[in-house]
Length: 270
Image (tube, one colour):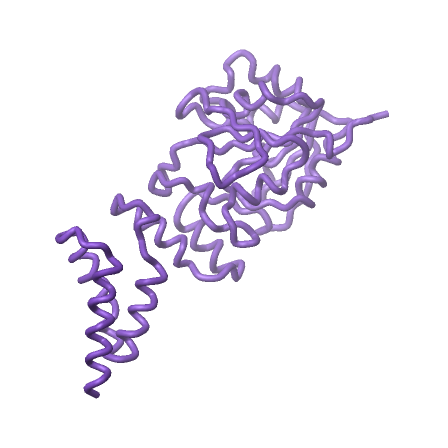
């Protein structure tokens, strides 16, 4: 009788890669989780047992074992191989860090795997999803041993196993590979504003550290300008502040204070 329980299953989360289709930003940290937090944070929270994350360590993610992605550009199978070195359970749950999953979905897949080679979610196209799967640790280790997973297809590898399919409703699990996927995730799931996602994209395009964007200060200013001057003046004003900050090197807070003062003076004379 199978003694392993889902709670005794270790997890590997593949969170490396270059994200070339989404501007090379850290897409696993996009605030697109079901609860509005980072994708990787929610994936980790949904995984059973000890969670091994393959990729660069993110300080915002706690209670995980970090493993370096040994082969840059080697693909997700290479990431799985790297993570297997830290797995001690008979079965291992495997997920990507750039998708949305719930603990209930992970549990259902792990339960279906027990007594078989493994189980995986079934994608809308009818194929199994190898990065939302639970497999026998030794079975996946043997499949990866010869190549260490470099440039291998996880789908083709796992198709060699006796995998049980687990149906997941269309739209419940969403891979975030492009900006179209990211914006669709915001709009389709009533997850709030698209602004945080959009700002990450623009910051990446303009090569500006996202932390340097004074979001709340600028939003407060644009509301004041739009209300007390006119709406079309608001975006033009924020552009001028950015231009001045880059040209003069002055702190954005000082520049915003100057403009706010001008708004106050204008209001006093109305």
